[in-house]
Image 1 (cartoon, rainbow, N blue to C red):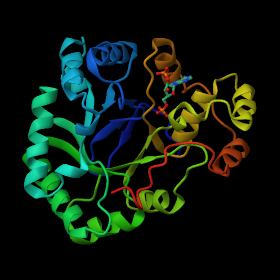
Image 2: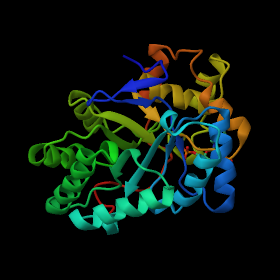
Image 3: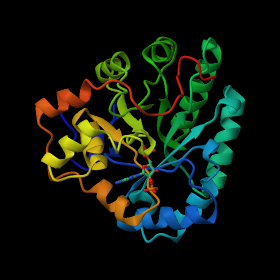
Image 4: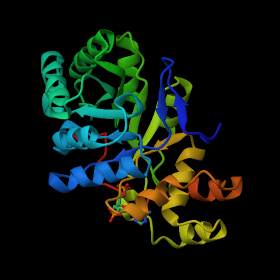
Length: 276
Ligand code: A2P
């Protein structure tokens, strides 16, 4: 079923807002204003990471916003150099302190470590402990391919609630997507606009024109219709609003097929098979 509502059910019974606000590369004092504005225009799901170096600013924006903590969904992630059982617990403590929060809604392993199943498993065990203690409402992974997920599923107790991957027209990791859906692992898309590089593509422009929507809106709607939660980012209010305004149209099956079959043409160069 395509995602067409505001909240998506997770495999542990919890819920996650169906659009999030990405924050990588948004740093410094400007970050406080951007996040406050994002919350003001309606985002309730904010995605950060220890590696983004903006947790403190996001914490300030949350405190200064008019929205109650329980109405926000905050994600952070443990970076590669903090993996392992004890390191992960410490990294999580820093994250909570930086964000100035009592809990986060979702905590992820940012990248799998290739050729080191032991480290991935130990890190996951730390997340399971945090989850059992209630300091994290949901736990998950990011950039995990099917092969990385299989190791976790075969060796651990809690099934990840979420897998956040790079996902945009021209980059669909079909194996991983199908595996996650089968295991009830909700997918999230980072760089759903291909870091802004999707927007001049002729095929996408002609599809977007049919629906009287922007290419960005089409990319985000395409994610939702593929049952993937997009995490777009923009520092501009008008675009923040535009990126939320995607529930009043439906991309036809034929156009979905065209986009689903596009070849890679832009995105990041970060490959979970080799990014270590
Ligand atoms: P800006 O912050 O100037 O709006 P991604 O989410 O895939 O990482 O892409 C983010 C990039 O896309 C940013 O450079 C952002 O620029 C740009 N962007 C975000 N939303 C829109 C939009 N609706 N129209 C055009 N560009 C957008």
